[in-house]
Length: 112
Image (tube, rainbow, N blue to C red):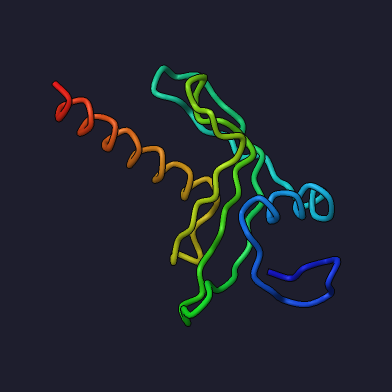
């Protein structure tokens, strides 16, 4: 990611990434609307960009979501990563939420 303070591309940790976005790129944050399973609509603040991970030559897309998924979620933000560079943030969020529901079902089935 381009670090606006250091004026160079560099590696940043997730917490630092969120702070940099809030302090320097907040004007580029976009809202993504998503319909929940009960039919209501939720709006997420997102920031997306393309970058590379350390020691990985494949470009990837990051989507930082500034929101909790649910009332039970204790995280203030989520960072989603994909190699689907043309996918929209909405599509990436939608696919992640579908996957999360499946993982939750498997956990419940294993516990009972």
